[in-house]
Each structure stands twice: as C-alpha cells, then as structure tokens.
Image (cartoon, rainbow, N blue to C red):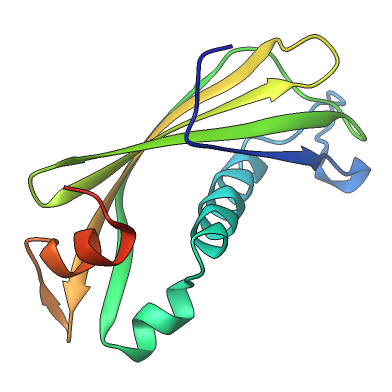
Length: 132
C-alpha cells in the first residue's frame, strides 16, 4: 500500500450487495464522496461552510477501476491523495480490503470550483485547503 494524505476505515453493509453477493458498483461512489467529506472535516472545514461562502466544489469527472470486489460486512480502508492541475483538483482515491490490504478500487476524481455561480480558476478553493 502506498502513502496517502488521508485514510479512513469503513465497513460495507449487507444491503449494498447485488445479486452476486458483492457490493453494487454504485455504492463505491458513496464511499469515495464520504471519504472526501471526512478528509475536509479533518482540516476543520466542510462543503456546507464553503457553500455558505459562495464556493462550491463540484465533481467534473470520475474514473473508477474495479479490482477486487468487496462483500457485505467487510472492513476496508478508503485512502486519498490530492493534487492540483490548473483549475482542477485531482483526488486519487483507493479502497483496500482491510483483512489483506488487497486493492479493491482505484479512482480518480476531478473537482472544479464554482464561486458565486461562476466557474473559477480554483484559487479560492486552493487557499482554503492550502494547496498550490
């Protein structure tokens, strides 16, 4: 497992499984988003605070590669790294099954910044999360 800027432990729920007994693909986006929210909270901030200031971070693109399925009631690690490329903020997010650290999902999430309803270069957002 590589080094990450933020890691959180999570657990799947039985009702998230599909007919094959594995976690339905759509639930992985929930895990990724929850991780981004918890990462932001760890920095003493929230998306709601930003929205109240007129700054909205919005998903522009997500690429997910499913590697190993998760099953109901499995613990896993949700990890992220963040970098900036111009106006985009790129979250590299990986999920690992906790029992054996097997990679389950690799995702790249592109975030853009909208300030007072207008697309931004992201400088306001970069300042809030202290990234260049």
